[in-house]
Image (cartoon, rainbow, N blue to C red; front, side, top):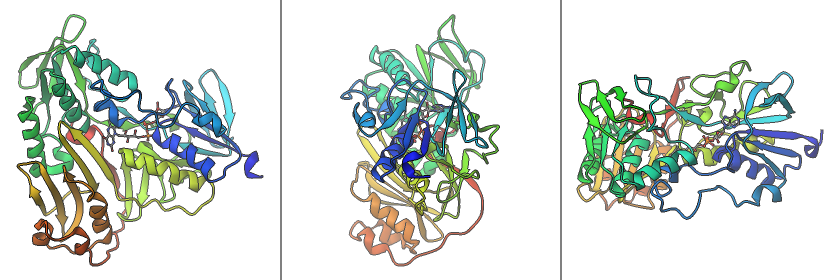
Length: 431
Ligand SMILES: Cc1cc2nc3c(=O)[nH]c(=O)nc-3n(C[C@H](O)[C@H](O)[C@H](O)COP(=O)(O)OP(=O)(O)OC[C@H]3O[C@@H](n4cnc5c(N)ncnc54)[C@H](O)[C@@H]3O)c2cc1C
């Protein structure tokens, strides 16, 4: 069959889906191209939803493309359309309203949804989660009105919401199950820095606790912690992690293990079906295992990579994980991936919050984070990718360019562990 007679369908009109559609056309795919999403809006970026958009400071909605983009390229964008089942044997999708749609190749880019807190009172009004534009608008309105807020969870989402709310002058209490914000990703050395940043900005940070129950007549009025503390509040935002949206796949026979399991070329176990973005647990050649990465840069690059794989190109997705976060006047970028390490080495001025933190394991750099220091993260990722042996004193020394630390290459150990990275909310531990 000629390419122009084929139908490629992308399920999930988020960042990964939108970028995949864009790439398919750029790479010359001339067939029918459907981008199906259940949200009413065209694809948009989520990072501003906890930052400038939440604070009402954005210049409009953070759409991925201009309004005419999809029509101009013959991309059929079906918004407000939920896919309810996939029948890979027939190469067909079932859509809400019992409609069917065939495909020749299929990309699954259904993203993730916030994990829910299951405690008494969890269904009261005024308990919010943040994933979509309307979520951000609803929370932003309350922050703008100066309402008092409890943030449950101090992972990236919780920490950014707390920062935005304080920037707007709201009173904020942040509850965390572990002892420090962002501790699971960053460890205690850097978690302490983030705790101090939030406390310096007036957040009441309460560690090592969980929510026992919410109380209120109709809307939440109090949070009761497991230690019996009673915190009066006007609303709550829960940021305790996200779960991959795999519900659609239960009867498909696709391999699902904390996300859709795909190979280095982003292909699933069923021919013609691919996955990208937050939903994909992809085998990573550098790490020699499967990673599911819940970050903007991953969706932005994996969508195009999956598109190229759908066109039959030889794809091996090997980007070193990267993400960013902005809280108050503290901007950071993180490259790599560290689950355990021997030492965290700092370069720069930690007290002035202008520094680079390096996570070192077996004398090799596994992750690096630049805080209010710019144009270095690519070098950091190059150094990680090179597998060079690094000397802690040279890492510490700002006079030594990062490029001078690269000296060799190392292969990855091979195992088949599944790993989720990033967890735009889950990394901070749940309450
Ligand atoms: C508030 C917020 C702030 C963030 N900030 C940062 C940041 O600062 N830095 C960073 O690196 N990352 C950040 N992230 C993470 C980043 O936005 C995500 O990793 C990225 O959006 C993932 O894109 P995706 O396309 O894989 O999934 P999504 O953006 O979740 O898109 C998936 C789409 O598929 C749709 N869908 C799902 N199932 C179906 C179905 N059955 N039928 C039809 N449609 C369906 C969904 O409704 C959704 O529109 C943030 C995330 C959030 C929520």
